[in-house]
Image 1 (tube, rainbow, N blue to C red):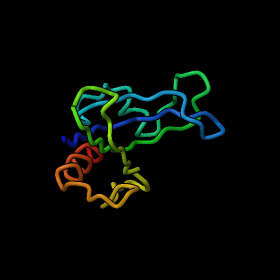
Image 2: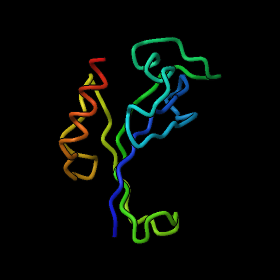
Image 3: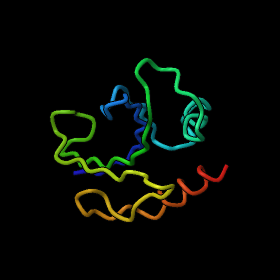
Length: 106
């Protein structure tokens, strides 16, 4: 079993439905366009009214085989902060808090 974390930058329409995801293993991998959106820039996607940043926690039986995904939980960045726990109560490792804080203050 293996647990893997990844960031998800989500684009949402005016109803709050997710229209697209952009995934990255680290926040530094995101293109400058994502950073501009995070800082309040205009979204250039059709039907894009807002966006969210989440940290996904995926637990795999056999990493890399989608059929072996055992569990997925999320930590949604709200009010400029990454929560201490995912939605299922799993602890968010401190390295992701440091990564987010460094990225957010750039």
